[in-house]
Image (cartoon, rainbow, N blue to C red; front, side, top):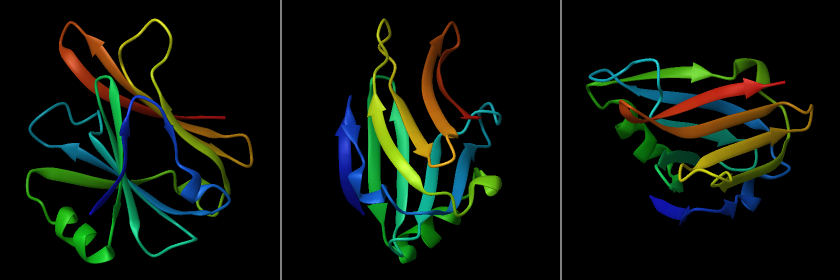
Length: 137
């Protein structure tokens, strides 16, 4: 595994101009199954997988060889679901992490050529913190 980014703000230049091949969300079966904890994506410009996630005020983006990703997908206690199937083959025009004004919780946005965005936010509420993700058209 190679850590590409670990910060409050960064841009992921390496995927700009590539097409989304597949995205997978990982859920912890022991916690609220509706909130993903880690995301994995593969893009047309390389065979490696991208792993990204949030932890309160920081965002993380890693690069994993295919052999490593197979091991991660076999972890017990987690569920892996393919997401954004309708976005397959869409071109990425921007990908970045930031901390929105007035919050201390990180976010990641992936923007596609058709104007659609995939947004991931760390939300802090009375129950602690969790990650929420959604597609915005």
